[in-house]
Length: 259
Figure 1: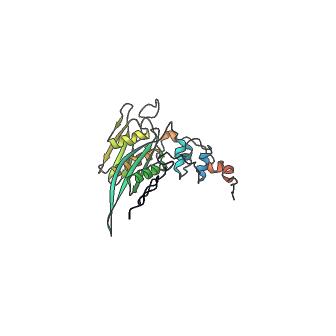
Figure 2 (figure 1 turned 60 degrees about the horizontal axis):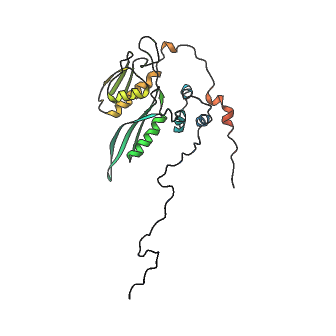
Figure 3 (figure 1 turned 90 degrees about the vertical axis):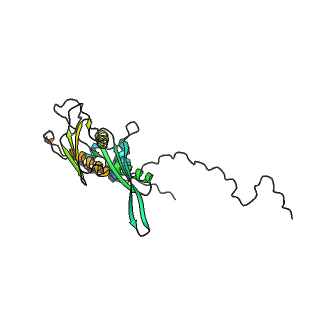
């Protein structure tokens, strides 16, 4: 028996047929509005904290990455650098499990730097998560002078040492115009921290870049650990940020309940 003619406008067979267009695929998603979940986040979003130095002054922990993004606009964004991506393996009963470890450094070249280390199954996930951890670990870097105090601070205030594993890194103040004397890794970190002139000295297995980056970061973290004579002046105690804005934090606001 001959096959019946196919009706016009319809496709035959068992194929899936033509699909309609999917709207919004491939387009950029609109940024979601930030809803803070911590007291510090609520104060930052309400513009009750003007500078990030106020957070460091009271040693308040930063738990939300949007707090860091709030202080750095598009005109002055944080610079990020992927220092190293290395594969790591773990022996399991089913064989070797390979993951990727990323070392991310962020800085504004003006006295702030952060380091994030993250391990994940995919490289993109490791970089994205490492960038978030680097922003959360942002620290202030104190800068000073070599000799006469003229102009803006340009070098580290004193000799500082950082260590991680077998790597030991020492940062030594340098005169103006010296530049950054060291390896490309230490130059990149010092540049992101806003240090223009510095001598570096390192010992150990500096080929292990992960430990080398952590050692330089630990040395920069110690710049505010020394109480130099210019900081001996009496400081007035002020209210904590949570205590100063206690009325705002107590007023949670009425929530609209929709049936």
